Length: 386
Image 1 (spheres, rainbow, N blue to C red):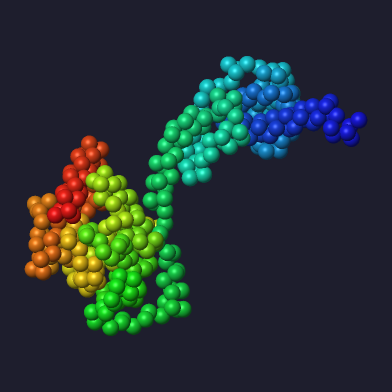
Image 2: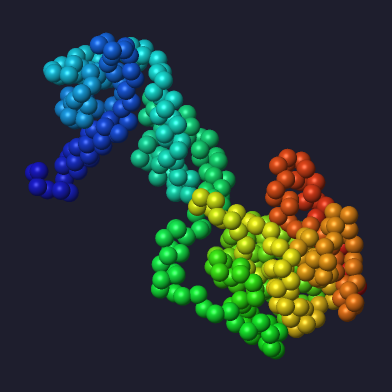
């Protein structure tokens, strides 16, 4: 009969066997000891509520695992006691017989909180492996609801903090196997369209910024765009992706354009400086403002973009973009919302860079600045039709 796997009684017996083995595994995973006493009186006590009579079956595992400790495991059905030399089985107990929380539980919660990986959170899978019936006896369980609730934000923050700067030894390898090429001729670009210009810019050596950046980040958008948005320089994520305005500031920029009824796919976006300038801090790359020489060197590319696209309006997002477009430094905070006409007749609308909004700490102030930037974009929408 035992060899007939389809027999109902055999199937039920196998299911019962699996349930007992599962309970044994859960006990090994979810027993949490609490310390009582100090010095010669030190010992550890744990409370566990198994579904089956598994304490004696599991006791040898805990002896092997915690041989150097003196411990007692209490359950409603039975208890196991190890004094460092002899294992003794005893009667069941009540939860009130276990000690209150000890200092080690705070350390355990700190450990659990720091090993939690929000990017790999799968709530249903977690509850399958750690059913809620065990939570009441787990010190870390009190953290679970808040960790789940904050997982999306924590995952985003983790991505934002991820290392993007290569390890120090990479520079030595690069210097040995990929010698630095000689700077190319700095004559004005001769490309006849944006794709050709973008290809030429990949080899730009007009200033030293190319040495540390991953790649040139050129402008994107239709060549017949009525408006060009000019930012400062690519950020960390743009440098890695090779596309402008794809980082946190770019995503906010996209949302505000949408709120202002400006089709992002019908405008051209670029930067005054095409390479990412940064300062390495640990494993992170921190944005560094380009200087006047770097802005001037990269102005060749921006001027060529303007010549090829011939927009009706250019929006300067921040002081660096304004300096590149107007040839001089201008006070953005005072001239914000102004339209300045260049000698060639091109209109330049001045406003802040969206990254400024992200740097505001107070939520109320941040919302107010976002609304102000939205009003700027609505003015741009009106000017596009003028």
